[in-house]
Length: 397
Image: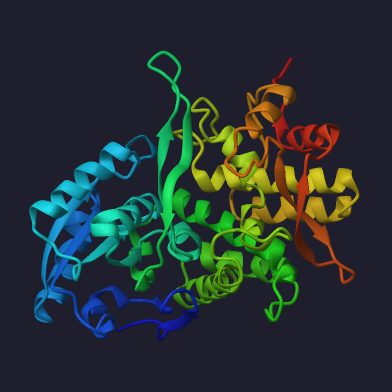
């Protein structure tokens, strides 16, 4: 195996599981699940990746005496639905997989969320393995046990899609983050995954016992090597971010803590979720609508400027966040945003709203000037407007 040796991060949730990070780890799936091999395995895979990766996974399982079958999935937000989950569950049931079987999620975060939801609900819950193939999924979605699908609560004339509105907490048995799979990841997708890394760096000071001084500067310095696809730097980045996420979710698996806990991982996301469904919004020079990571990057800049307006961080810190976002090749501002009042109203539909009170996460600087996350309920409207204006590119007059 070429490249750095795999790194393992332990997640102490449920029975506990390993996140194994490094080149070539996908080919050792069967050996990694040796604590009681399943009777049968369902490989739920992004249909675009089926020919590239599913045969190797099937072969690894077959060599260990495990029968497997493939269920291709359309990896698109429009297909992350209860109907898609139903079709996948029917496919699994028709292969007569029993409760000792296992579901393997092979793809990005969309596949992981959908496959995990199927695993959580099939026969009231079967084991599953996350095999993320995108940087975004490796550092975020594959760890922590959140599964789910979107729910359209609108009508035929006015659809209203709520992201991840139906789901379950269901921890994986194992996560295999094979960094070799990132070689085929488009540059835009790689950059999108960096948004979650920047987010983690902005809240690292909140995590007790995490030895990661000035995480934002550390991440900023590593970006050129990761963007150049240096294997060792990529493994180091993923491992550091997985460790942070593991420590957060271990302390608040179901996002119940009033002082933040797992909710801190939503930094930038309430802003992002307000604009991500607006398909006409496009970063400059991008061929398609906002990707999730691009929307999060914009949300991080907006959250930092909201925080500065609230007096929780300096304007210099907010500018620094923007600088790191730009260094990652991510958008820090965008054209054609709706007016501020409309955007704030859209924020009110976020699933983090409790008792009709908007909650957002903003970065605050501690006594050492490092970022920590803070929950703000019903934040000042003018501060929210300032956040939105910070990412607004006004039309040329």
